[in-house]
Figure 1 (tube, rainbow, N blue to C red):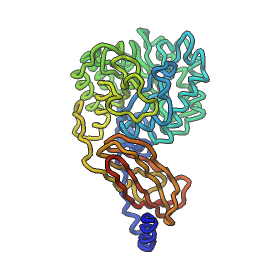
Figure 2 (figure 1 turned 30 degrees about the vertical axis):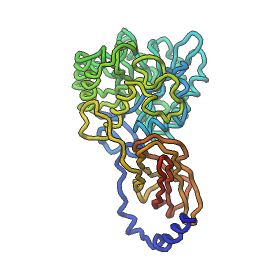
Figure 3 (figure 1 turned 45 degrees about the vertical axis):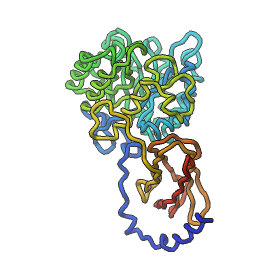
Figure 4 (figure 1 turned 180 degrees about the vertical axis):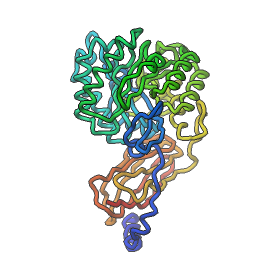
Length: 437
């Protein structure tokens, strides 16, 4: 009843808002809706740039091998949404596992492809980028399967600027000139016959470390970047020197996989080298995905065994690596960040902020703060006080949160969004927003 009165009392005032008033819309500048902001990615010189020609660096997480039980449960919409909303990931990598004696794409192609498509669909809906990774270390032996895989992905999703192709995860100690480059040429030709614009990332020899070698003999295609992988406790300044050479030679790099630990995925977590690498990537505007969202008992895993497959993780659900990397991703929103940042303070109070942009078309971001864990409901109402959309209905951890409303099927007009959060205290607030077609 109270909410209905609010709507009625506002109605006459709101109906006199003119287009002149609406022209003062705030430009949305947060990276949460990464694709809405940056649009089509391309390569210019040694930089990845957005639709406006500005250099862009994406930061996010790689999922684990798709065929293994420690990682495959996390190939779902709610997990990806949690990574966007709670970790501020602007990119997620779907690592389609290729090899396996009893599993993997070569054994069960439709099963693994279906998992990847779930992630692609989620990322497109959530407005973030997605890397589709042919997670293979001898892809030159699987050229026909790789081409078939990427032809299907390009045919179904090539329209979407969210899509990034990673056509070879980690070539082993093989020749760039006679093995990796010819393989890449064969696959890229087939992708480009279907999708002429989306970014393609090419693996480099020695487990995607020999970017300098590739830089002396690059592929003759537009919008191609090259893969750089590192594990902080194993790969240090000499690999950064190789990356610097590649950048000076004019190729763009994308760190599609890196770990906080040794190259085995286990061993020590080297926080000093994580800091050195973070500075290097920041200074060179390199996009990256950390390995990995899984609950395997190893140092590189972001989650402890048994962590929920659908997100909603508390601090106790994260490993030491997971805590560090989440802080890094969150800290990239802070322009002063130069290394692994300390934990951000939790909000002191409940808050529901004005949506951005407002007015908007066709989507907008609603942000809110929770000083404690709470059961949260956020709904959209029309001028009659009728609920027309439910955005959030779940228990969420303390912190700063965002949710996107994609009003694609709604008509122009004035709407309201209302939060009700129930923790130790109950918080309720209503704000107005304006959709313009």
